[in-house]
Length: 121
Image 1: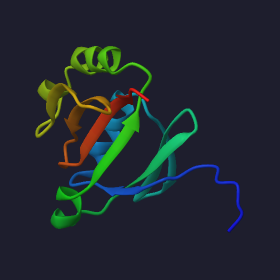
Image 2: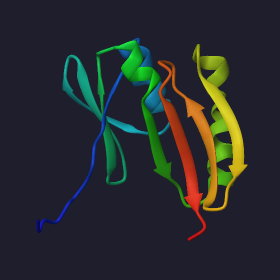
Image 3: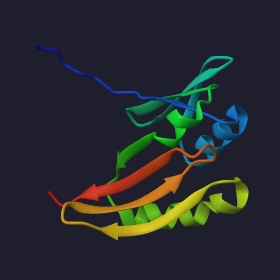
Image 4: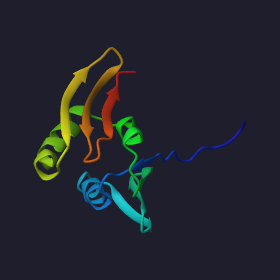
């Protein structure tokens, strides 16, 4: 198969769509509304679709890894946003070191687990 991929955009759900929209804008993503129940959130050329849909088992098992250039700086910026105080259910887990690299974690208001990390290789 020969193709030139340009992006990959996962679809994620939201327990409360309006709260999740605000959360992702506060996190620094730019929103493009597609319909009343779906938006594209982007940063640079990376993006994901947020849907006004909630299936607990789906949300509880959704994880997204976002590679960043400097996980320590990203962690400090996450802390400065004070998301845990502003959004119910948001959890932050500090940076962990692994053989392959480093990462920190963020649960969004719906429970989706984000990994923000950098690779050593």
